[in-house]
Image (cartoon, rainbow, N blue to C red):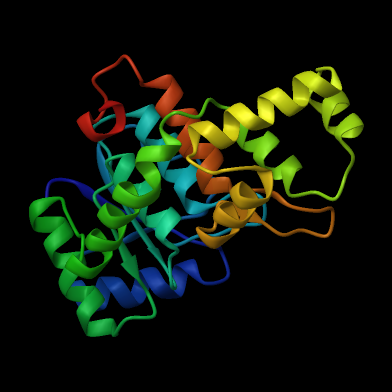
Length: 235
């Protein structure tokens, strides 16, 4: 292969996994820790790292911004529909579930090297279904509005929400109503229930926060809305 094959993984697991992949695929798979600088030349990246406060989607997006020639494949266990949609939205080469059989994943890794794509039909179908049911509604949001969505899920007063949003209490109520209308929900309670049901919010000890994948998707949609990034990102 002309393109280097680079595995990004946690340092405790990465070297052994890179060695196992090298032996299984019959070609060298280079190991790179998430904090290390990636090569400047076009590469095929297999991202298996999930770190606290930073998901593989963000690593892939950063690599993609550094060079449009990089091909990004994510490899994590049991991805959510939101994660799959965001990877599909960003034009990543694919997404593999490492909980699937090793031999099946190796087959897709070989396809990735040969064709530049590795989207198992079941995972692609989930991403496309999420776009139809949820993603098309999320495209109307602006970066930052996901924080208001999370605030609506917090048991705080409208006065506190207004302070957090920099609005009057009446202004905060109107902003919440607009958010409900944009997402096709009848009111804040219905909106919050809908958001939880599709994994748009994440529970933490400090309270609900936007799912990192949602924040990344909205940031990317805003940045590339008027650019030809991938077509599905701006349609």
